[in-house]
Amino acid sequence: MFEITHKIKNFTHIVVWKPLYFLEKQLSIRHIYLTFLMLLLKSSNYKHWKRLSLFPFALLLLLSCGTTHPETNIAEGKAPLWVTNPQDAYPESGWLCVVETGSDRNIAESAALNSLAQVFRLDVQGITMANRELGSKVQRNQGKEISESAQISNLAMELTTVSEVSGLIGVQKDFWTDNRSGLIYAGARMNRAEGAARYRALIQENEELIGVLKDSAKRTSGTFAAYENLAFAAAIAELTDNFYTILGVLQPGTVNQRPAYGNAEAIRALMREEAALIVIQVTVSGDVESRISKAFASVFSKRGFRTTAASGTASANKPYTLLADFKMEDVPVIDSRYQYTRFVLTAALMGKDGASLLSFSRTGREGHAAQNEARQRAIRSVETVITEGGFAGEFDAYLNSL
Image 1 (cartoon, rainbow, N blue to C red):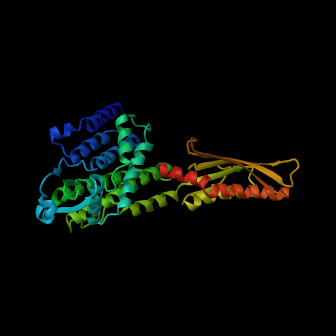
Image 2 (cartoon, rainbow, N blue to C red):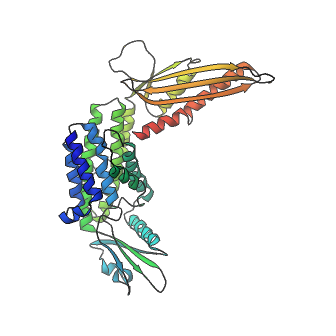
């Protein structure tokens, strides 16, 4: 473990702080990616590898933000050929090229990159969400079985604020200022052969990673760890689906078979199947006619998880446990025409090893002219707190953090 962590620290130091190293050594992004992947595969601790395997994806996406190619040309004087006749400058047989204008460089560049994304028939918003999801995973996993470093933290922060089309790797850009009109011209282009080679390599590597995560999920089936592995695989698959779309435009007809993993939706279907294998035992102290238990159970069942009531019999396959405590207390209020009932709800979702995965608490008070109705209102209020936004929202946040 020390050896792999030490190597990874050295590697990230070179990537983030010594970018010229790769130019001097003439190493491609694919070479960087494969080098890091080999380091990860040497680790015998799979969970450690899984956490760290977010890094190469983050690295690739970060490097793709207009910096994956050293050629960003800024022209002056007479309008260059790519402005007056882009197809002559970059023939369609070998290039995909678009030109846009703007009142400043950032506006022109953004317009060009978005136009290029449209050439690929890409869902710009979808790419942004997929990339930021991976970026968020990097951030959430800081300090979890991964050596903390400023480099990785900075990388994660950068990844969450990347360009809307950061999924496009290998984009080359040109700029020219028309001094008479003041407009900035921005050209965004991709070389078909070079880009196709990159994306084929990335697709192959991503499919292998998805396969490893699926196999691990099978070995730990019936656990949130399996669900987490499939969630990670789904995030990678979302990105890889876009890679297939891009490859099909760069070299039409080259994508003749479906991805080995199917598509991102196929992985999400596996997540739903896995959820059905996860059993959560609901136990509520102070329950009233099982209403609080049923509210908790409905939250889990609506998300595809199985629930069971508390049982005194031992089970070889110990379930997860939701332990809750519900208390009501009549509150006398002097000189009031209303009767009040206060409630206190606490709950904790416990792992199979007894560790707390999620905790939740809520207090409140309900009133009515009749004390019994005040109690009923308190119960209904707790049911709503559990099923609509309160506990349900906390549980969704937990699932999204996996």
